[in-house]
Image (cartoon, rainbow, N blue to C red; front, side):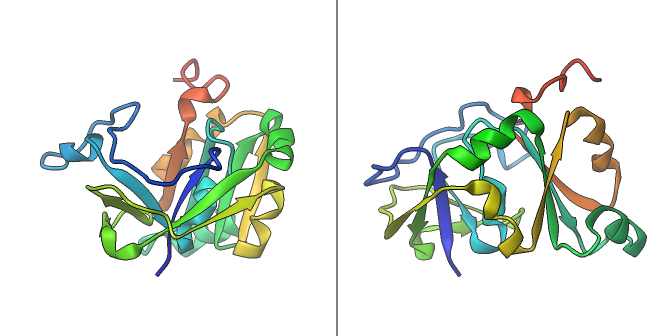
Length: 178
């Protein structure tokens, strides 16, 4: 298994554990996830981070409990879909991000959408620059879907799909729409 960390910084020699910038409400016993950690994503879920850092997005894929009709309706023939607001599309095609490969032995699996954490410093084993992010989705079986606003997609959390929202505080009309 391969683990990665994505950044706009091309010069990271060591990842030091640090607390999350915006703490989340965690289940009892998991509050430590807001504390100092190094975060990584597995290769099956790396598409979640093929975006400029502050880009709001919603990502969906079928979960074991997803009804077949929902899977067909929302995913059609792709394994996952990534929704992004139209005004971010130019940045997706213009910006470069850096994918750092990290040694898997230093991490523990959160059993949550491919996320892994390390409680101590981690030295990356490789760095790859990725440009033209908009072209990275199709080879992974992920459909990039461009929308005017992410706000109408809030009902996705009421489906049987796995739904991840990242940087939604940066989405247009997110807070104003319920």
